[in-house]
View 1: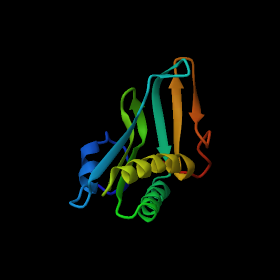
View 2: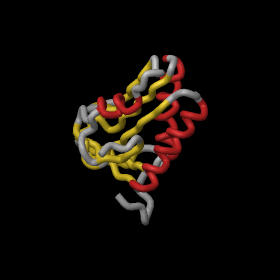
View 3: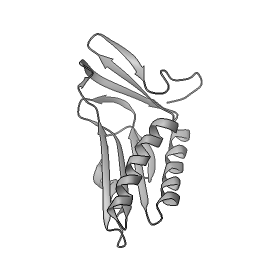
View 4: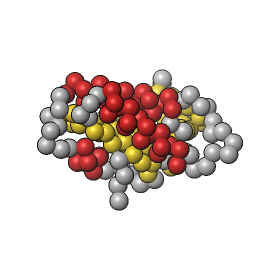
Length: 147
């Protein structure tokens, strides 16, 4: 059963989240997907490994959803982030937002991805041809955090 704000270990079906936010009063639905890319600053990525403190991550994703509803009345959001090993082209995150008007849906969607990077305890390790590194605001997973 899909939750509106979840961390998953399986491939993400974006349509499930778009369908969740769609409703009769919504004139716009935006769906953002973040994918694993092969090249970053001239370095070839082989794959990414995501880890998360799942209960807290899902709580923070829901908080972002609440923030969106408060900032853009009439919106509805759903967010899923995948953990585990992801290959080139795989979807790491989906954010679906519906709104009566397109501008709010676009703005809320962009807001969501920035807030995810700021506050959600999900860690990304990039594995390259010649090494690996934890990327993002938290370079490595803190002690005591669980996957």
